Image (cartoon, rainbow, N blue to C red; front, side):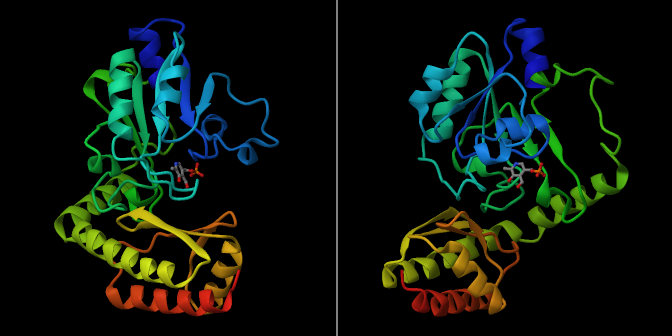
Length: 284
Ligand SMILES: Cc1ncc(COP(=O)(O)O)c(C=O)c1O
C-alpha cells in the first residue's frame, strides 16, 4: 500500500522502505526482506529490492537514510523477536516528525505489540505518535487466523476496489472473531489486567535481577516483558519447561514473557518461583 500510495501521490521513484535492524516482520518474501536479520534471509535470495536498514532507536540514522526514493519507514513500536527492545520515550514521536517533514509514510507493525499486549490497545498509544499504516494479526483473531492492515482515509486512496486481495481476506468467520476480541478486550477489563499484571511481573523479575548477577536487564511494557541474561537463556527456558512453565528464549541472552492477557497474580508468583529455582542452580 505504501508503494502504491507513493506512486500515486509522491512520485514514480518513491519505492524504498526503511526498516530497523533486529526487526521481525514475517516470512513472506517481502516481509522477510523487511526483517533486518540475516538469518531469516538465508536461502531466499534474491530478496525483494527497495529495502534499507537502520539501527533501532536511532533517529539520526533514519534521518540520514531517508532519500529521494524513500516512501516509508516501518518499525515495531517495541521489537518483539529482536529481544523485547523498548525504544526511548521520544523515538516514535521523532520518527513521526521526521516522516511528516520528509513526506514519507510511517508504518507500525503491531502484529506482536497490538491488541492489548502492552497494556494499551496499540503500543503506539504509549508514545502519542500515530502511524499512517498499521499491521495487526496474532491476537486479533483470538486464535482464529486473521491479519489486517489498517490505514487512514488519505492513505487508503492508494488502493481502489479490486486492486489487491487474498482468498480468505475479509471472511465472515475470522472477521466476527476479531470483532468479539475487540468487545472482550475493551469491555471486560482485559487491558487494565494487562497493565496491573505487567507491573506485577516486572516487579517480580526485578527482585530476581537484584538477587542474581546472571540477570542483566528487565524491560518491557504491559505483558510483553524481556529478561536479559549473561547467557544460557535457552538452558534456563528448557529447565523452566521441565517444571511446567513455558518461556520463550530469544537467542542465548533474552527470555521473553508474553503470558495470556488474563493472567493472574498466582500464576506470576509461580513463574517467579520456578525461575528463581532455575536461576539459583544456573550459575554463570
Ligand atoms: C512483529 C511481527 N510482525 C509480523 C509477524 C508475522 O510473522 P509471520 O509471517 O511468520 O506470521 C510476527 C510474528 O511473530 C511478528 O512478531
